[in-house]
Image (cartoon, rainbow, N blue to C red; front, side, top):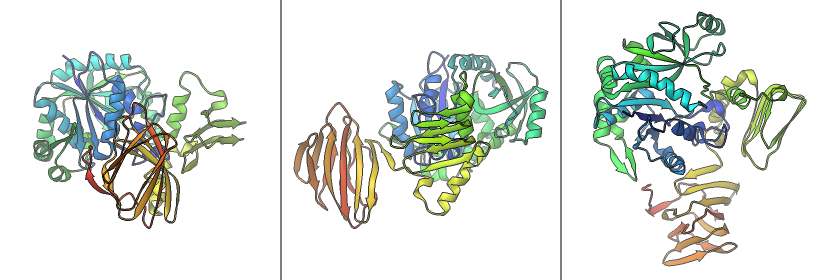
Amino acid sequence: MVMTPVLLAGGSGTRLWPVSRKSFPKQFAPLIGDETLFQASARRLSGPRYAAPIVMTNADFRFIVAEQLTSMGIDPAGILIEPSGRNTAPAILAAALTVAQTDPDGLLLVAPSDHVVPDAEAFGRAVDLGEPAARSGRIVTFGITPTRPETGYGYMEAEECAEGPVALRRFVEKPDLAKAEAMIAQGNFLWNAGIFLFSARTMIEAFRTHAPEFLDPVQAALDEARHDLGFLRLAPAPWDSLPDLSIDYAVLEKADNLSVVRFSGHWSDLGGWDAVWREAQDGAPAPEGAVTDERSTAIDCRNVLLRSQNEGIEVVGIGLEDVMVVATSDAVLVAGMDRAQEVRKAVSALKSKGARQAETFLRDHRPWGWFETLALADRFQVKRIVVNPGAALSLQSHFHRSEHWIVVSGTAKVTVDDVVTLVTENQSIYVPLGAVHRMENPGKVPMVLIEVQTGAYLGEDDIVRYEDVYSRN
């Protein structure tokens, strides 16, 4: 009998700023290889062992989730939209209640969507080891065999040093270095990967016993949920009343039916740029530990990470040691490699000064494609807009700006008031202030255009929508 993967895809990885931000976090970026972390996770949890996945995410990421799954040919069993972030406890309960509607004894395999596990088959064998215990009413966790005294991870103490499943004694918070070294020497402590296997019935009963205050609000959020373009929007009122707790604190630390399976294969949560540096050298250490990408150059450097996420920026390091430099189109991070866990402080500092770079990119992803700002000044803005094949922007108007569109690639079907025009490469069209207009891509390839806005106010909230195929307000 197959099990249902549950991918948790709603978080924001601040420790990988400036590439990961609240508006587009690390799970949706191709940090290792060509696939995004989310896509790699979905691929790992597909195949004969698994049913179609359930994805837990938020409204901002719903179209990104759908697009990345579609590009892989994966049709999810459901994409559940959390109205607000309430940590992993309510998300996991919502998934369990969803599966229980059709199969109370159905198994769920819950996993974060931003981890690196290159050997999917080895991980699958670990899942197979845990399946009988999960079917017998145990909550099975998966612990990673430590390879170093890591202070950035939580740990789990297993009853014995066997492969598993064995009884789980306790969870241990992130330790200091001395404690981490002592636990590793003991041999029965594992990194907590946040991956769990259980039946829907078992998890619901665990909440009923240890955290009953979650049951009614989560059930109400599901009962009152509404379907929206293939997504299931959980009802906000009951959901927002829930405590903000992880599954560990709400249930697992109180439960007495926990087992753990040891996984000794390669694993990383990519919890910082130092982890990306290590991953880039897995199996093929870089000369002098200098990890670069195609737009970076290291000269006489040791143990450095040089990375440019922008085609127009070359990063060059000379004589650097134990340093990481990460550049995007609008921000550059320079930090000591041993300060990787403190990158989130940069996000807090930028937020306190009101810097947009703290949480958002110049590139803004939308359900129809994306746009990015190329120039912005008083009374004008220049954007590059990419519209996916068959996609359409909303029928809209603006109070404060007019727009001039120049098609660079592909063909645009443009509606301005009652006039519909096909605008092809090297042609342009003007949209006067107040005109009701829409842009569509009727072609088979992405359509690219340059938009020049002029007016007294150029904010994204100067939009009146009349029709929208994506049901946005």
